Image (cartoon, rainbow, N blue to C red; front, side):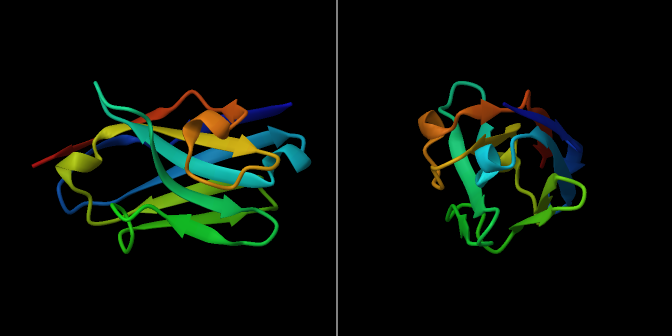
Length: 123
């Protein structure tokens, strides 16, 4: 079992930055792959970035490449998402997810989810 708790969301103006955190607990094996997703009202959940926690391999969605950076602190069991140059279209609820085997951006494949943290970017 894995527990994920996101924090760090808030409201910023376009061009600003935020850093999201995802505190994880439970099975390390079940967290072999961790990802950030987001969901705006009326839209499907969208994969933002995924990391293989053992390999360190990272894959970003094109929409955030060059602006967002994922990182992990294994000592703190925490995943981070540094978001720079934020745009109004980045406004969404952001979720942390984990899975033991799937390292991709398909939301339906992830077994464990946090409750989400809201990010709002105003123009």
